[in-house]
Length: 323
Image (cartoon, rainbow, N blue to C red; front, top):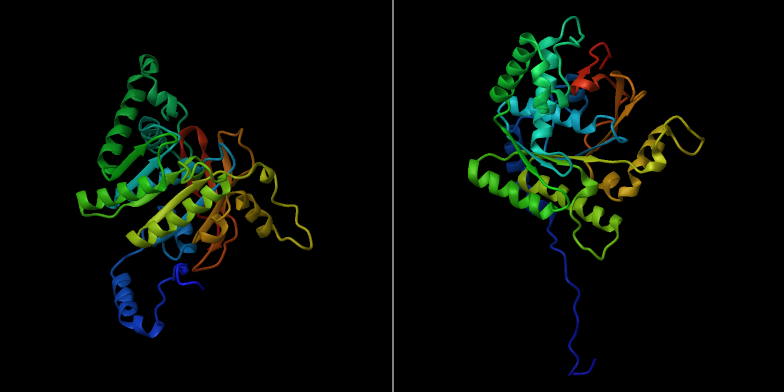
């Protein structure tokens, strides 16, 4: 090499000797002993997740209108009711829409009898949001809504919602999580709804490259803040209707995994990968299954069974299914 030519050296990664990390390893084990799993409110799901949610990236996908936001919101409300903060980044729905979903679910629960909601007393999301409808409600119906709102006020004090369309990036999320922790002294569970409409890292990059980057950064966020991050994902349209078309080369699990491949790193970077499936989206109350396709620290599950009361934004776990 000539004297006047500068040598370009490649950037080196930080490499450590494993045995030099023993002390920090032991400290980490002790720290985790004092950190309990965060319950989802679904006992069977918690069982399959190793007793609940831990630090890590959880991704749940479904086709359009299958109830993925409603399912995750129900988990968020349960976590909040048990004194853990939840920070929701809603890129599609407004704060009022999310609140109305939760209040609608409360009217369902308040009117429930023998496992079925009272169709007169339980109210849909628009029934809650549209003030013009209140004129036609009976006193009993109005009282149920008032009680549902009081339930929300009582138990959802730890829900924080950041809404935005196309202007929320992973960096925004990181900054908001840090600001929340600095302000309150508590680290929240993070929910992103949903992945495909996060603001891109690089306008010149492809959708796949931007998505891969977002997934990696969300994974890093869960590690840095030691908190669960739940990301909601759409599925590629080629996967709609698939599921039972097994071949000798591809198992049903492989076929389900392909639904996420269009999003690049989701399959590889997530600690837990789940998919909601419904048999009939036209039914008001429908059977829904949840498949745990990947569980980094456990086993993929068989289908977990739920009854989804879609009109009233409520999922009920089928407790008759054996663990």
